[in-house]
Length: 294
Image (cartoon, rainbow, N blue to C red; front, side, top):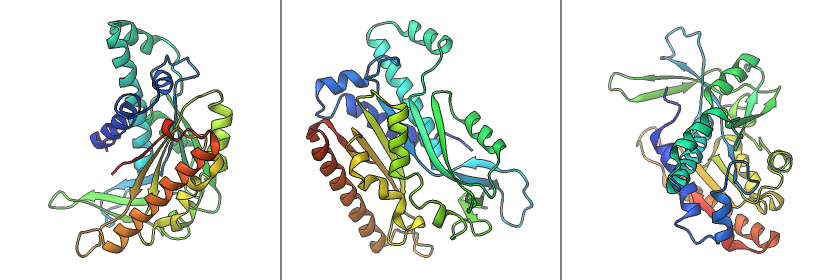
């Protein structure tokens, strides 16, 4: 499996680069976003995503090995890569690319990205935590939200005869034992706030990007979106990114109108909540950005 899909990496480059160049963001914010890694003005990126355990092969095949997958680790990797590209471009403007490469290889790297995700402890192990840490670059801090009552969703995933990707859940992974309950409000707004207060103290800019289950009947009953409706949290966020997940109809292969309308409605409500929180916070709505990624 490729951990870093080009689309995800490009999306994060667009989010971060647009924040510092294309959008109408005050100079103070632009300066902080391109600051040195050791500068408290450097943005902190928090990725809230999902972890899915992959068994590569069709259900009828006996598969013992499990690989960590899901969009969450991919997004965290892409965020770290995008920030590295931004730092390189900043160095290139000053004609000190060699110094940048040398410092990146020799200095202790600052953990500028935090990846937060729920895991069900019934089938999660310390070895999996170690595997996840090895998959991600050292600039990513991993914060897992455990639940002893659930399993981490597991799927069979394979290519069929036509090279189409197929997947099916294993052992009720998307029922109440797994994702449908595990993904409800984990991490919570308070979990994210705790991370901001403990790890991002002094940061003038916090970028929050979340993979959100959506549609008319989303997995987790839509409760993974709850942090975006918390005023205390959203008033602390400068850039809010939402990546809605909705599945096509099995028969038509298309997203239904019902699901489409539900996605649009959810995104609209999340955006309004973000704007309201920013107004109540520092009143500077212009110094913020709401981004929706496909």
